[in-house]
Image (cartoon, rainbow, N blue to C red; front, side):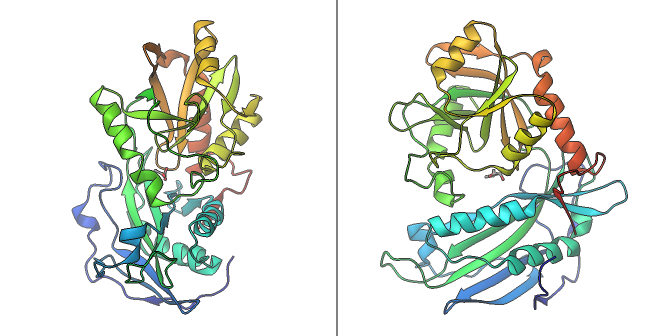
Length: 354
Ligand code: COI
């Protein structure tokens, strides 16, 4: 539990929920009735408020719009069979949020604002949590700089907000992926491990070019040689080779320390599957494919959970993966979903009761 916090709450007069079909939801399109907003000024967080979801009034000179001090998180809330609401591993996202804040030279958000603010907001909009499989309430905490000035320096003022979006699956179908050899997502010493807005903005051209060739996303490679694999689109990536799960390690700080990545590693270990967190090159992947030892590859992230990959292309070499071989990925996904929806025991204390 976190300390009591003085939050001013203003409730909506009429819920928008009756206008929305919670059984048929695209990802991230609808927002619930309320949002949380807090302000940072003179070295302190103030004005913590839950209020009706509404537009922000911002000046054109807002520093975040020009110099990109902007970070976010993605977290999910579920309902169990008894209608109780749970948030999945929110403390991990809270810690990562402040790691991102540090890297982007932004203030730390205190635990009571992040956690207790989120808990009260989700409790208030609890009826928005969809009950359908593969659906959830996606929680989006974010912070951006709010000084109004054009000098390049860290802002003195910031806003922290949390908005909620009832959401269906991010990738309803298995993905086609091509290995990126021109653009770079992250390099050592950069901001690849932080969840800052610019990482996502910088990835869009590569994704659009991949889509023009019939692929959904790219598999990012290292900046120096374009051969060491990093992330797939905006997700961590796992390769199942010879019944071993291999995922790029966090050491170089070029990839996100994914909460779903960590959950999948834990569950794979419990299933008796060896997991190697290490460097993995596209050459190793291709050799394993040619030897018939590489049958499953998937992305992990909060939004997508586990996203299967059906086609992976590197130069002219195309690897196709058949759904009937996706045994490990499907079983880890089922285990994770069962814990998140309360139908399997929560042995790791991953669920935070709202
Ligand atoms: C998440 O999985 O939460 C992400 O970061 C993806 C998001 C940008 C939609």
